Length: 151
Length: 219
Image (cartoon, each protein chain N blue to C red):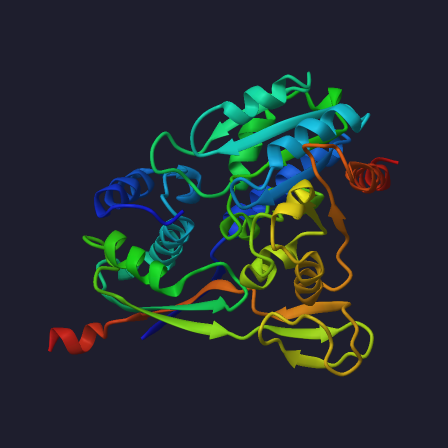
């Protein structure tokens, strides 16, 4: 699944970045972290207000739940490649890993799920709701201070 | 300074999936998403199921390359749409927009059940809503018993497990009870259908479950 070469990756990124459609809709990603990375770039780029075009993004802040099927290292690797020659070039990536928290539907007990055991430690029920751990979000962008840079 | 964003990364896919769901519901179609690792026997299960289910069905088959699975399924007489995610390299899952395009090839008024055979992969397909009504995961006894705890998201996201290739059990050291224990550790109470699609043994309870799901939506 994650078999790819840098050349393939670059090729697939170009296909995505050139498209005006959703980057996921490009259907050209070699692995799903790449599709997710392309989507992050699109969201981040669209979030920079028009009067701030040309600013340098220092850091992209993400929230990723531990239950989501995303490998942070692969995602960072993909982002590093596809942000070259863009306002996001060189931006660091901060990933806030969100623990898996479940709430029991029987006794309302809330606990942090470890080692993929999804039954209530208080009452043993398997009827539960996932409170957190499925997040895949762009939270914010840290922008380089324009004042300071012009001094 | 900081620019607040707070956007779900997959919200484009989620919106398309909702549109698909509305389209399928408006046309009275139940959609089943079938996922598994490669080689677990999805296509054989579907071949047998299509001939026995007694519901007007169509299939969307996702593969990175080839139309082999579609050719096999087409022999059942059901309309089959093959989606190749890429000629070379390839996407590891079917996303909502791919299903939207593939569904255009099918006359939805003519069917009650649409089965999506996803790309063989236990990781990525679990992350992508395609607008389905139910998800099932196929696990074969030729794989490790601990697959459910290695891929918990898949087993959390699915409503039933199809434990396939049970005809091989006499030749393997596979511990079925251990595997079922792991499945229920990740998803307590999840129905597990033990079957051999090859011999046809154990298919009936699974088909009955599927008929019930379809009936519950379509009446």
